[in-house]
Length: 306
Image 1 (cartoon, one colour):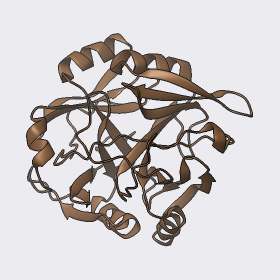
Image 2: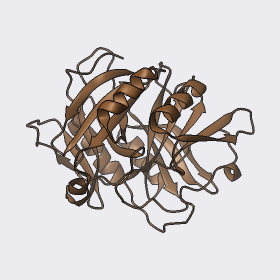
Image 3: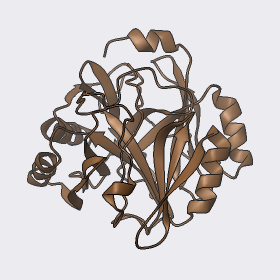
């Protein structure tokens, strides 16, 4: 990965939905081994909300060491019946992500990548709609008894995204705590067409984001919250269409210093946004991109409408 410091990244933290990304994708795992998204069922369905992330990596031990060291996450394992383990990473006791040893997903030739999962009302319907609009199925829909129904698809421009219908409901929309997922951004070769795809498949209200004077950036809204943003792919030879998740940190500069000491490198230097936040993008020690964001005025963000 190259340095992104001079490239545009249209990340707009307009109203944070408390994205605690809570789902799972482990090929061959027993359904009984997988805990539900919520210990206490919420009874809520919030289609369009990002509720989990999985890190597919060839270097799970090194990645777990990095993320527990950087964010103070704790790691617990789920045994896989065909051998190996799936690691659940938790922030203050709340699961936020999973790590699994696996060759990179289809189309990925690197050491691995994070995959975000979005809540849907019907996984099969979302997959069918995506295929009709030029997307493709990476993993077909399947039922995990305690967790719900999940699948993975590639959108019409090749970006990977997991989909899940949680059997215990979706986590409530609250301000994300430090150490949890707070935002998601899609880099697309054609942001306009990408916004149309996500509107048609997931029912997002896709609106232009012109606050920084750009004409090629969009916001994806649902249930009155801005869930994610879309912008152009940086103009670098190795850049690609993909989703990028952002973890909330208390102090961005301190987090970057700690991350680099743990073996990460900076792709996007810290920058301020129009939504009272500061963000940066790193490559972790396995060269997987991860975003960091510091909310400089969380109270204002909690109340602000998209």
